[in-house]
Length: 175
Image (cartoon, rainbow, N blue to C red; front, side):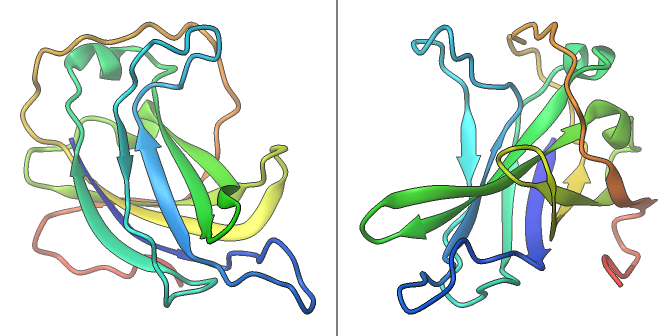
């Protein structure tokens, strides 16, 4: 599967005042949640570059090829996990929010077509924020890879916009 992290809008700064930090956002993507009980378990993580200029409305356009097999699509609880961070010079990365892309939102697209999805970003505690992240997903040929079972049902972000389009058509992502 090819995931393009296109942009985000309406992000909220983490603090205000004379010592407020400018946003330097980036996003991480994983196909399997990190296991807090086994820190030795490896989980492939993909990371966008830091957008130093976008502030509360960053753009990336970073494309990632995430190897998934058919077992990922057969488990209705499978998700792509999206975490939004800001990079600070002294304290390092600080999580701004997260969301999940449920496998049911991805579906089985015809090869070569693209599905544009936008998700509301949730705060660390799970409350809604005004921020939205925009992704483009394109299925590529499946590979046989190991899939870690995840039997936990999770609260899913709800799709704000989700529309399959062909690779050559042009649509507006967010109004």
